[in-house]
Amino acid sequence: GDSVTQMEGPVTLSEEAFLTINCTYTATGYPSLFWYVQYPGEGLQLLLKATKADDKGSNKGFEATYRKETTSFHLEKGSVQVSDSAVYFCALTNFGNEKLTFGTGTRLTIIP
Amino acid sequence: NAGVTQTPKFQVLKTGQSMTLQCAQDMNHNSMYWYRQDPGMGLRLIYYSASEGTTDKGEVPNGYNVSRLNKREFSLRLESAAPSQTSVYFCASSEQDTNQPQHFGDGTRLSIL
Image 1: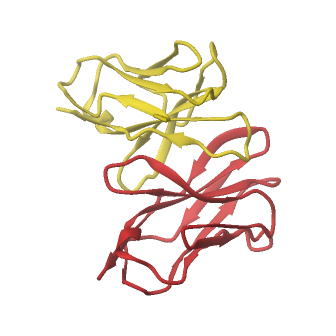
Image 2: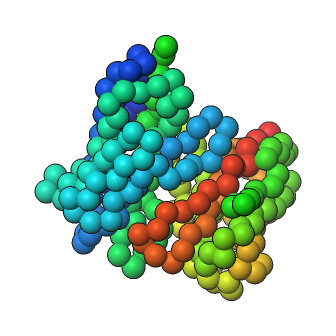
Image 3: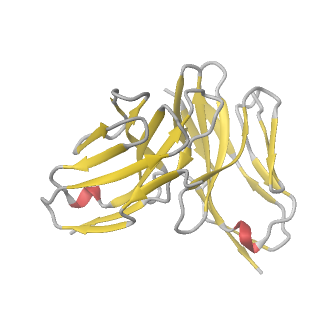
């Protein structure tokens, strides 16, 4: 079946550092890929998505590119802020099935 | 614009008690979902409903039942709560389109003593 593997956390960075959170997937066909963010005490919110190979999703300074050749969807941000501290989930849906398959999440803490 | 509303936000139960978690969405979505979130395990799907009147098991359905009362509401019931069901429960809804995201409620924190 489909699966998503994320880099283990927690990740701690200083403010203005460069962020990469790795995500790779296993799926048949052409899945749609998502990054969700969960702030403390809240539900998950969509951060960005990409629905076909070579698409780049972007939002709030975050970017991720759908790489079919490496089955990856790594999340990047050039300069993180304290307000980016949250848990980040990589996820996918696959053709004919809108159920999400999630990675285990990566907790990010940004220190001033 | 409420989105997905879950009640209650917090609940403490004793082993063997029953309760129903409520979820309602105002986005006219056909699909609704219940997940549980446990440390180190991400979100796991308990049940989902692709449309009013239909429900299907997800990854971890044992110990739970669901009701899709109408298009807006999807409830999750624990008939006899067990400590292993201590978790944070999230309801979500979406269009029936794999390219569209799911929209999540703020969660119910449930402790079973």
